[in-house]
Length: 96
Figure 1 (cartoon, rainbow, N blue to C red):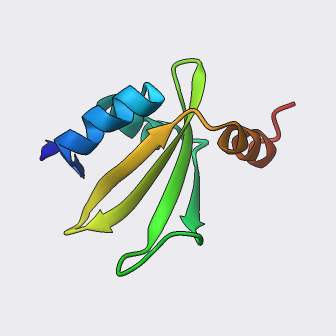
Figure 2: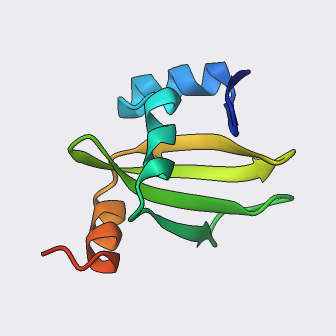
């Protein structure tokens, strides 16, 4: 398991995410630093723990990060450049 202060993730899941979506979790966690980030509850997925989306700017792109809270840490589940996430980010921040 990898950790970055208040973040954690599964290393195997990170490698899979990089192959599938081209985004490492080490880069994805930077979306939380965007002061204009948008946090939404993931109402389609769940189970025993609530899941959320963080949509934020990293460099010149908008990354959507799926995460949950575990043991007072943000546990990253997945990350990608998602068109719908970019649209939500732009609408919430009134970017045209």
